[in-house]
Image (cartoon, rainbow, N blue to C red):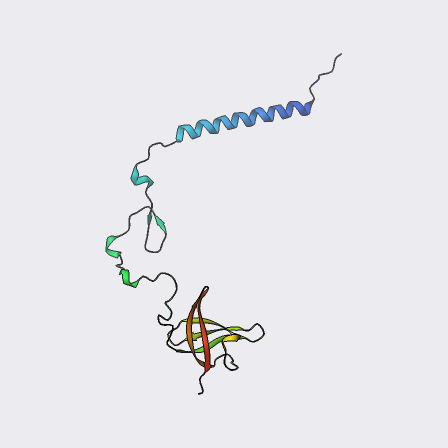
Length: 149
């Protein structure tokens, strides 16, 4: 009596493979049957509400906020226009070990400075006068002098 060349395990794997193939074909038929082609523009449209969330309903025109072009600020705050005038400010940060720091002037601008620009020893929170200068990396303070209080 001859033995079957197929083992039980091989038959089970083949049955599983055919079952998966059949399920895949059924899913494909379901997708094709339930597919909605040619949606209208209104169904595809998405709106952004005043909070930045996506919505399917258009925004209420009565809630529209009017923004003036002059009120829009792009980029960083403008620094000194005239490099020849002296500014006054306060030392915001100073690291003696590394030899650099930052000064915030009375108008709110922030200036970098290096130890080479100092005329005398400084500490954080000291009031100073300085001359702004434009460098390749932005504005920096030059000719820094401590203001006696």
